[in-house]
Image 1 (cartoon, rainbow, N blue to C red):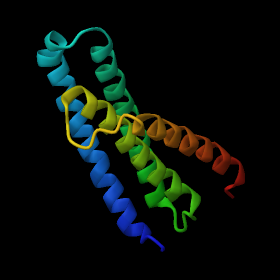
Image 2: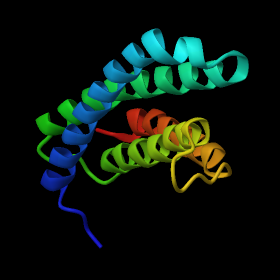
Image 3: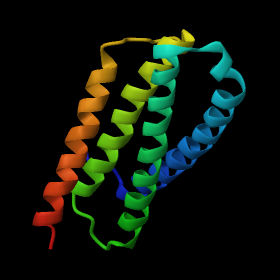
Image 4: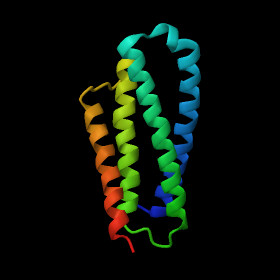
Length: 132
């Protein structure tokens, strides 16, 4: 199944904008609500997962804008994009689902999401050497 790359870019940039808004909202909530409600390990998990989302949002924005400039991005760069999105959802949602008792909490998915993020970053490193 071939994903339409134009649609993929639009969806990615839309999701990236949503992630940015979520980071702003979560940062405010951490400062004004969760800082008093959570402590220790729970607060550390919330802070680190929110930071990861913020950092990865910037990376997704950069890659998405870069892909828009390419006439033919190939298959590997869009694969990195998809890997980052899936990894974020698996990791960040799983951490937050555990903290906030959200539905579909499967704790085993967080490490899988982290591994997918790592693999996608390493794939980006490989692409730098093989892309013409």
